[in-house]
Image (cartoon, rainbow, N blue to C red; front, side):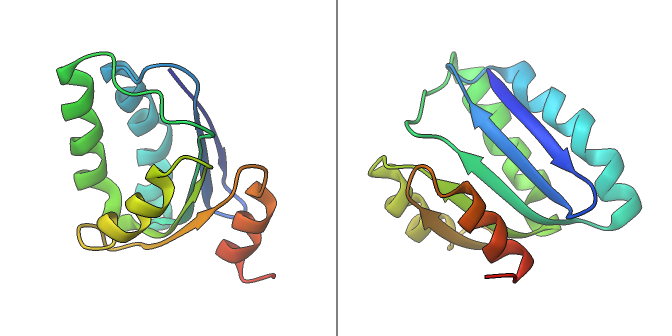
Length: 122
């Protein structure tokens, strides 16, 4: 399950995975963000606020996750991964080879620092 909010004034999508990720999570995210991307041309940033990675409910959920990334990564300027999980550093290094966005890892609790990095108001 993913909780999400879209700040249309700053063009930032904030997602918080709270339980094992489901296929429908990515369908709902697309329904929320695609109309905004269509009218604005893209997102300034995506904040992934995940103290721990909850995993996927099923193989189909994992595939839906990868498809969501494939379909959206060129429309997102920056991605902030806010986590204390060791996956944060790994994701920053690995994902940079596969996605167009600039990626940066922040420790848990540093959502505001991530937002400032995205908006250039550090």
